[in-house]
Length: 239
Length: 288
Ligand SMILES: Nc1ncnc2c1ncn2[C@@H]1O[C@H](COP(=O)(O)OP(=O)(O)OP(=O)(O)O)[C@@H](O)[C@H]1O
Ligand SMILES: [Mg+2]
Image 1 (cartoon, rainbow over the protein chains, first blue to last red):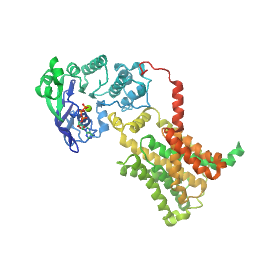
Image 2 (cartoon, each protein chain N blue to C red):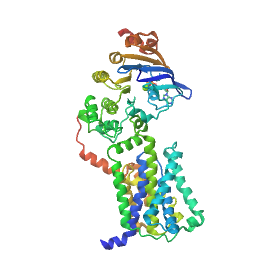
Image 3 (cartoon, protein in one colour):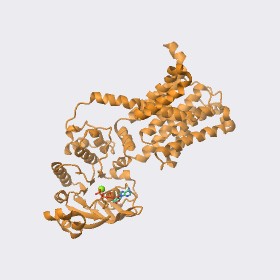
Image 4 (tube, protein in one colour):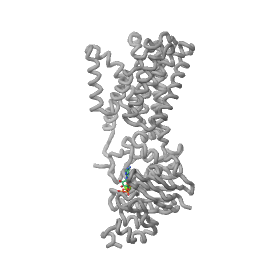
């Protein structure tokens, strides 16, 4: 059974068809990568999956049950967590408190989940800092830690390594794979193709709000449509 | 001390009433809900308490409770009706609530006493009761600023979409802030009526909007402490400013404008920044 599924999902903003008829299914315990040029609808698809935008049409399924009318706040309780493309931390709270906000959805969070999330994302030294005092890469880690503190079964990540250097990206990639090995299903949006190949089990490529290719990373990055739409000459030289 | 208290008892009472009034809009503001419905609720509380005292002879706490209950129900309905409004539009709509109310009580016939208002709502409510209620309200609100509820309310104000994504019941918290604002405003209005034994349409008019906003702008809206600072300042400032006579209103205006422009987080925000700067050592791993 799939963990989460989108069937013929469309999100239109007036005349803009940000997402237009996407089918997507995430298998448990796998990392699915979502590639696509700027404006191809990746973030909008994540917003649709997390019920933050209304669907123009289509069906959403969580563990096989339709949820396209569910309250967005109910999804976190059902094990769906996400990060955002832009860093969204509460400026007056410390790093530790921002992470704790993730665990707050349970009256009694499992012992150690906050500390664990902080430790795994490498935030141990800055727990008492406030977001304004962090570098961009560090802020992104807090986003991931907060999502992990909700104890999710499914994690949707919108460009979690944007603004990080190569070593930091590598670290996040390793973290995501470790989480996958522990059973956490993930949908990962990233522009760094090499990182996607290294991290993901499956890839989906989008363009103009539609899926243009899906399959194993090797299949997708060599797909002619994808090459044309997104990868460009620079990557072709690599492959 | 006792002499001072007796000479100033009216001001002391009105300071605690003002505190509750200020809290009635500080609570929704803290949740990012720009609702002034607490001020309309003050009018509901003030008139309900007078009516049930005069016509039904209810004891003071029943009269206050009746006003609070009615105001809370109306505030909840307002929250449902105004759910789509935010910011300035919500502010205007909720100011309209208090303006409509002040017109309604003028035209309320015998029930509300028309333009003269209601007199003789005598009760045995004492200053100590008012202080106790205000302290209880402050303690409860202070608790709501800590731990899980504190983080949730911060999240609802700063970033509702993020809040929703971590499972915070944003809509329910917004509605609750309306209702709590209604309870606090009505409590203030009802106690004021019973202390003074009278209520008139002017007392629940537009000046309350100005008073409540100035208290919160100058004191700060992030915490109950801001409401307390505002209540203290605007209760005692007039006595301090007595020597400027007619210029009082001007001085008021200048104080509020200066606070709004230069200290948007209020005196409370200034104090918090100051404390934070004193405590902050350099951070490892932080930005240089
Ligand atoms: N709230 C909105 N209102 C109107 N149009 C929007 C809105 N959000 C996104 N769009 C449009 O929808 C399209 C898809 O945007 P989206 O953010 O989903 O793309 P993306 O694939 O995430 O791009 P990027 O890689 O730059 O993050 C774009 O044309 C964008 O301008
Ligand atoms: Mg995006």
